[in-house]
Amino acid sequence: MKHALTLPAIRAFAHRRMALSALRANSSLATRLKRYSHHMSIARSLESAEGVQ
Image 1 (cartoon, rainbow, N blue to C red):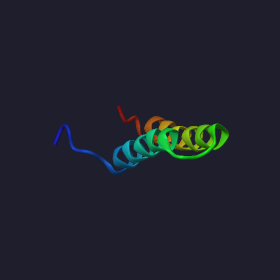
Image 2: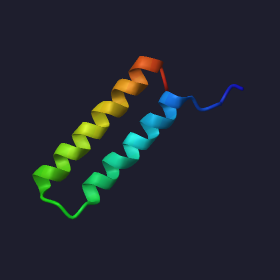
Image 3: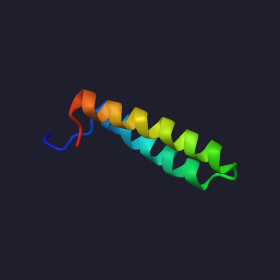
Image 4: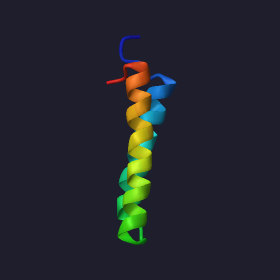
């Protein structure tokens, strides 16, 4: 299948969703930014490692 999702693609998508959820959380700005940055860095590393678009 040409458009089949791979495990890294699914994990990257999940981490992007967690990053967006972190921005909406009821926490301090510093905490929200730290969680957002953490999840986005994981998503970016998964995408670059597997060549996911």
